[in-house]
Length: 408
Ligand code: GLU
Image 1 (tube, helix red, strand yellow):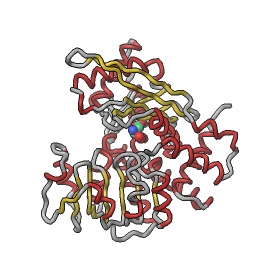
Image 2 (cartoon, rainbow, N blue to C red):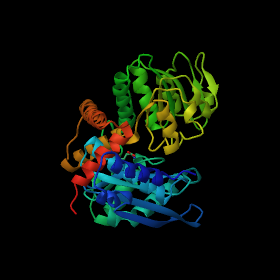
Image 3 (cartoon, rainbow, N blue to C red):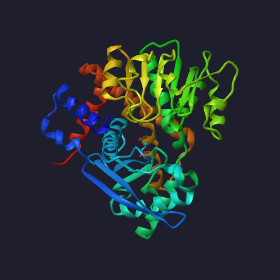
Image 4 (cartoon, helix red, strand yellow):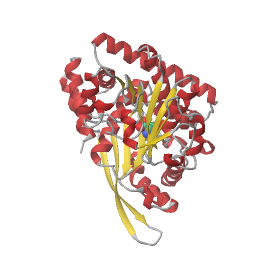
């Protein structure tokens, strides 16, 4: 079993060697500033009481309040949450928002819970972490298996704790409760933008794409690519994989997915239904891993035919898998740059909340485009200057900025 924290720490250590950073700062970044482990009690609908392990990792706040999602999944461990919070610190530094890195999670299988149980679990977790979050302290957001509805429960429970509503305590809220236009689309839109910048730099003219994972990130990235002349030839999720040589109609598929997650039920002329692992072998010049951590590893990396990989998910390629891809000269746009659109529009949401203003959708997407292009070019220039991979450049650029932003 891969440990994402070990991978993240190794990559941080390597960066100190590649660009000759002062090693005295290394211990500041390997572990979070504060790590909270809570035992979250839930009274089930049948009256039984179950206690779940919950975490909040506050990695580094040199550049601003901690920021990052909360996930509900059986894969949640203390090390996973720590790694994800470290990546958030890098992501915020790269995309130029005044936040540090945080992440939280509860180790739970949400499929076994009713909606009322999810609400009670969220309120219970919020009560336990309430003294350590706040709109200027640590600002959670949705992540794997959490959403706007869950953010509403946090706002409400936090208001009970503070005696007053603070909309800026979380982002990713529904629009009617202080959410921002463009936030739902933001991560996928950012993945799409990074794909277009990199495809242009690499001169990829046959714009065929395979997308692993069709949750919120994967499907929006695929949709924007489809609408802008890319041919999305394959899409997968845990149920299977769709393949169509001439390109899948992603507009239709995205409507289908709103009510049915089983790709085997999706029909379109000339579409083939494959196994979910076949996604790694399809003929496509661009591959977007938008599922979970470590999906690309030493077992499948050498099968991938793409010239360009853009990481929609957090940590989808492990260190071993990356080595194999780099040997084949594959360009990888890493998560901390590629999927930073989520936290970027979270920052816009927080800014609107704090200043009691509302921005429109076009303004938000225009701002997202501008800031994403600046971040991509900053990293590209840094990469060329120091002769690094995109991932090394991201780590080095961000670590440098975080170290300089601190008081010691
Ligand atoms: N969960 C998202 C991420 O991993 C968004 C975090 C946020 O909006 O704070 O980037």
